[in-house]
Image 1 (cartoon, rainbow, N blue to C red):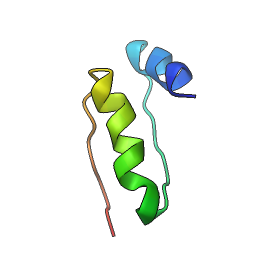
Image 2 (image 1 turned 90 degrees about the vertical axis):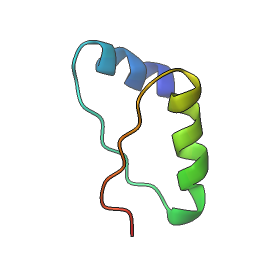
Image 3 (image 1 turned 30 degrees about the horizontal axis):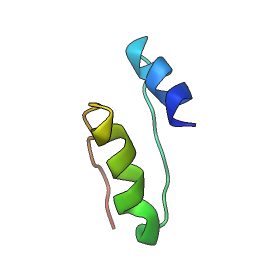
Image 4 (image 1 turned 90 degrees about the horizontal axis):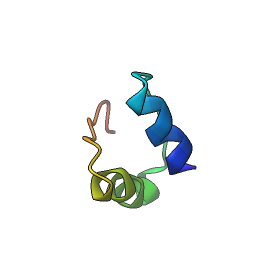
Length: 44
């Protein structure tokens, strides 16, 4: 799934993911490992 998101980001698209709190760390790690800047918003 991340390859699809990364391709869109390369074209200038935006991405929004709604993730359960228990899974947030894992969901941040994959894009960061690929060199994508992860901007966090609205963490609760």
